[in-house]
View (cartoon, helix red, strand yellow):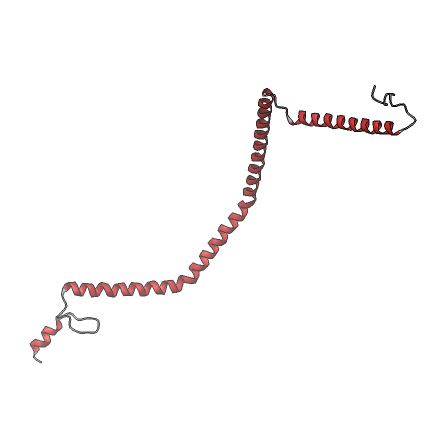
Length: 159
C-alpha cells in the first residue's frame, strides 16, 4: 500500500471490532450506537436486579408484615364498632316494631277489631263456659241415671 492509502485509512471511523465504517450513514451509525447503549442498559438493569433482588423481596416481606400488624391492631376496634352498630340497629328495629304495633292496634280498635289480649280473654271465657256446660251435662246424666231421684227435681247447680 502507498503512504497515501495508509494516511486515508487513519481518518476512517471504525466499529468496535476495528472494521471501517465507510459504508454506514450517520443515521445508521447513531442507530447502532443507541442500540448498543440500550443493550448495555438492559445488562445493567439485570445485574442490579440480581444484586438487589433478594433485598427488595425482603423489603416487601417486611412491609407486608407491618401492614398485617396494623390490621391486627385495628381488628378489636372494628369488632367493637360492629357490635355497637349491631346493638344500636337492634334497638332501633325494636322501637320501630313497637311503634308499628301500637299504631296498628289503634287502627284495628277504631275499626272494632279486637286485639290479641281481648281475643285471648274471650277465648278463656268461652273455655270456662264450655267447661261449665260439660259439668252440667254430666250432672244431668248422673241425675237421670239415679232411679231414686224425682225427674222433676231441679239439678244441683242449675238454680
